Length: 263
Ligand SMILES: NC(=O)c1ccc[n+]([C@@H]2O[C@H](COP(=O)([O-])OP(=O)(O)OC[C@H]3O[C@@H](n4cnc5c(N)ncnc54)[C@H](OP(=O)(O)O)[C@@H]3O)[C@@H](O)[C@H]2O)c1
Image 1 (tube, protein in one colour):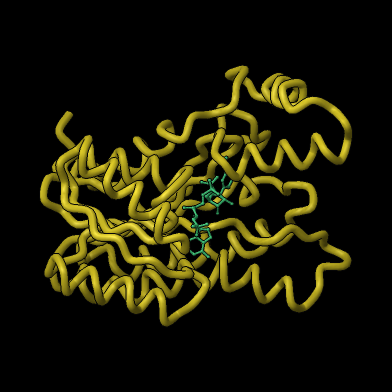
Image 2 (cartoon, helix red, strand yellow):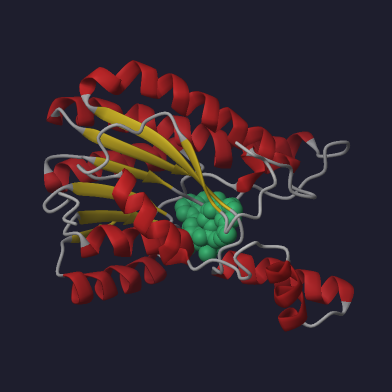
């Protein structure tokens, strides 16, 4: 299936590693030109070179901290200066800091809100005018399974990302007639650097081996394993494409069935 992405321009946040990198790879394989952003410029340049080599697309790198409004504005401005258009926005960044409901501090809440709520709002608000100019747009937000069920010690994720779901639904109402579709994907346990770090920390805390912890986690997942980043990347590429023409305002789990919610 040709997704109709050839020549389109996509911004991918956190595009140097993990889920963002997987989304960038899937979009590039479909012929989309990319703008990738993350804080470490060396990692970003390395990822851009690999993507150019394998997919032959144009990749612009814009280093920046996506918790900051100024860096988001620079990212969108440089995209439009370089390519003259913006068609696809994959809103992905680092996760919010850990926190429990009863005692998360004011400072941590502010960090979480910048990182996992205002980030999605700011990226969309800065980008939608350019999508309207082009008469077409697709926005995909990378959230977490915490929008379906709580994750221990991550109340920050559930609270901020539920806000992002509400925002995406309102935005999808407002921009549907401009041919702009807005969706969310919610990963469960996909094996990225961040996910490995979570298991390594758990191993240090408990004394259990990382392999044993991964095996125990796999046993809780109906498909019997953790996910691969590209399993999310390919869905994001579809949602970002011409072939997605009627799904908007939706939140789709990529979790191997681990979430117990029936909807
Ligand atoms: N992996 C999963 O299964 C899973 C499950 C649920 C939710 N998620 C969520 O999905 C997102 C991506 O997770 P991941 O597993 O792919 O993480 P990852 O492997 O750590 O990759 C994160 C990417 O985002 C960049 N990044 C982090 N903070 C940033 C910031 N403030 N500004 C700009 N770029 C930033 C990182 O580069 P720099 O560090 O150089 O900036 C890196 O490129 C996170 O929000 C995470 O909470 C993931």
